[in-house]
Image (cartoon, rainbow, N blue to C red):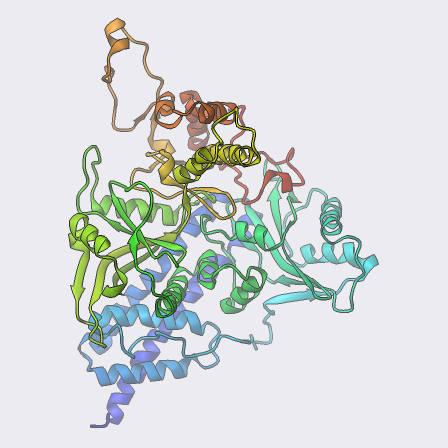
Length: 616
């Protein structure tokens, strides 16, 4: 039976309503991102943080609005499947000449999967693969500007061109000394590539929009000379008092941009007419960074999830290893598993938690949402969150299935719903994070190589000792950056932190986090008598929000060498007064500077303070 003309009209109207819903979403998304420039010029840091938090909620709000409209106007949930087949075809037609077809496809998937039963998720009613290419999309509007500007310097003009690059962003605030800063940038360029001969193709390609995050704005571009390319970013920051701007550093090369766009940072606010063109430009600068993580960094987390899932399905088709229980110390709250050949871990909330844990599934989900919406300052891993995820049963070890059925039985269903008749494992709610080396394993490797033996002077032991000290220093740095972000990690054991491929220590266990401003930092009271001093029990009262920093030592610093290294660099973390003084500054509205690059890269360390100076 062929669909009637009336059916086709209804299908088109549904598709058009869904497209209108997406267009409204992206218009609001761009408005929030575009106003970041005004907030930066006004040094409105609280407003900038609110915009970052609020923008995360926009997508689900617009999907909800679209669902309500479709149900009211078309009774969408009652429409037959042949109508939905036509809806998708009409929607594809509406994507022609659209500037965000990739994002619009993801929006279609989000709406459709909430209307249709999950048994249809594997068929042609959603965009499993992209239907419209995002290559070479151009903004044809007369007043439009291109994705990036190109500048063509000659040797005498190099400094003038760099100056013009900054001025073209038309920031309505004064620079302290822009000529001086451009000269410093020139020094980095000469140090990187030498006083090279400019080739005929020499150019700077600079993305047209600034990237805003925390208290900074970033110019992002790529320098091309002959066969060489040098991706770069210029951080723009205010001097103390938010009076004048400086170029704080010249970040250059894929590794430094990887750090800037890392998965442990908050999302950028950046105004993009054609986001796929920005992603293409950034992927060229960072070819090892998956495109899904670039979309995430730009605040387009739903598109990041779409690409992650497509990459994941592709990887499953081209691999044979099995999901297993992740190596390391098992957590009391989360069950963690991984696929050895895939650089991510999968986390399930357990159904029950042994003492002394006192929490619930909803509380834990709330903590993860808090981290998603918070400024992660490069120290808290971003997570992808999925519901009703289907995996092939044959890719799971029997031990992992038994572990899930024992600790999270409500989260697993084994079904024969696959179209090929294969058994599936369906997980109700999964968090996915980038895989890191657990810090306790990283330190143990250094111990095993002789790093903790001061009498061992072999090259391997000396290297292991450097690794040990790097890990301890970075652990303390991570805690101090979390303090700057108003986050108390709660469970501070080494196993709850991981080491990235760039050597950064990142926190990833969120079930006990609290705001610093909600904690009460106390010194352990003086014992009243000898019995108190000798008691193995806590003899003083402890409130639910009380924290005693001096008690961290026995749990963290049992190894003498680790203790020596920690006390050398981070002894103030065991002092309640240190935590309290920073809490007081946060309560006054102070927003600390936290830099997504090494201090040694900065031009103006004396003009702009570090996140938490040791003087505190």
